[in-house]
Length: 176
Image (cartoon, rainbow, N blue to C red):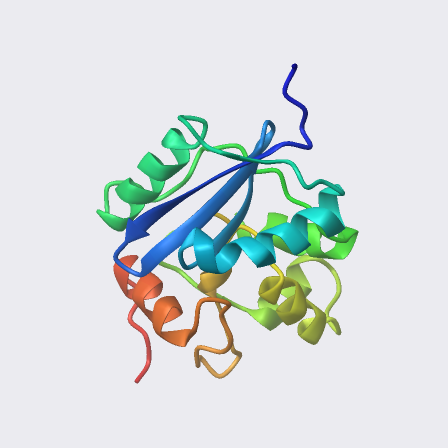
């Protein structure tokens, strides 16, 4: 049987911020969640049903080895950018926001307002925050690099402590 882009390969890995569950289509990484697959799998199933209309999940053999290695390198400060393929699913607006997150350099931050301005939607600050919250591929799509206008860390799917850890890892001095 020829693999379809509707098949989702998944695995988990242990990192300094805890376990990550990673999923990919044949086109690229489509989903990362914080936690072990036994805990995150129901959310992955709901997400895949909504965006890919699939229930075909296959435990990864070696399909995600490169992603895992690049994440390991990132956590070991050996990598500042990722070059794995991503396969992002969301609304047009969400995808626009996520694509703009790739422009934030390692160790730097932007505000939600900065991103809204960058996408020519200056009044869409809250919507940018919502898109960030829905980012299906955190860390690789660096939503942790977006902070509040006042410089405070606000919102992160993995929790503020993980956001703080990632920014500190990259050398950004977090306030407080």
